[in-house]
Image 1: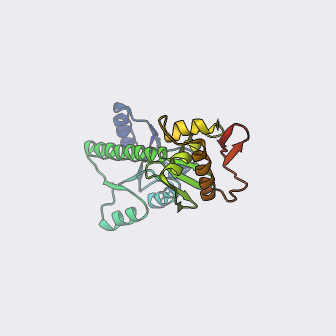
Image 2: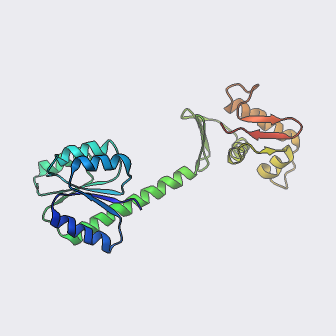
Image 3: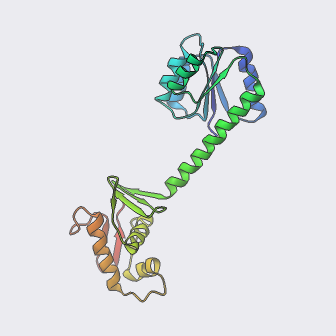
Length: 231
């Protein structure tokens, strides 16, 4: 798990937060400097940032604005400023939460856990989304929606053309005979013939190749079959 960055100059609050994070086995890093915090974010991924507004070397609002340009991690303000205008300004600069001092440590940790839980969920959803996508050059295959996009524009393919392209893209640089492609894409019990593969590859080339007569992706290996050249 990526660490939580605590940017707080009050030593009592530092000790309190350290104790709570250690009890819950949550990784964290602490600094009293807003400028050090920005440098930390430049080089290290964080799961959450707890940011004091009143820092000895900088303004927390300005630090938040700089951080938001560097990271999408949730930012939670810890502040003795309780005016609505301060909260509105904080949110407008990129903060995700605003906790007034003095705070209840139980409530604060519950909000921390909620942000971390939401972050893990979003990360999982992003991973699942990426697992459904195969990229090569400017082309994206979305196996979930069964769409192929080139330069973010949908390429129209038949069902079997899509299945054939997916199979090729999942096995880059491996040579397949027409019989192997029939078995893997059409199925072992297919009644289709070798000519079916030739026709579909020709059609697929017209859809995804810039020059179908000189294919860049679906390459003919003479005397053997075809391979997908990952670029």
